Image (tube, helix red, strand yellow):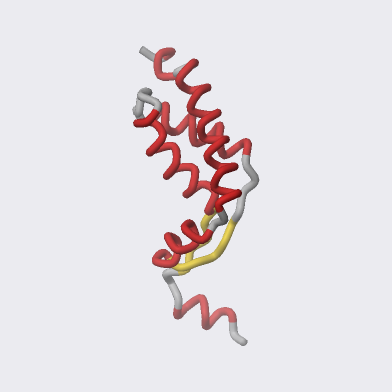
Length: 102
């Protein structure tokens, strides 16, 4: 099997941390539910805090298959991600870093 040939013919393959995609999705939806600041800095801080608490899960996939991978994650793992997202958002809500620059 010629790996070079596969790489050349399938340019849509990407390397992605599916945990990052799950965290981004859950942070963005939870911000509204928690009635907190949704500015870019607060969102990015919440992403970073949650991602640092979770192990990375890298996969190679096509861009179109990424959504299917996210949906296929088991309920137990999605719950773990949700718990870390809520913890991260509570930290950001209590100590919003954007207030330091204003």
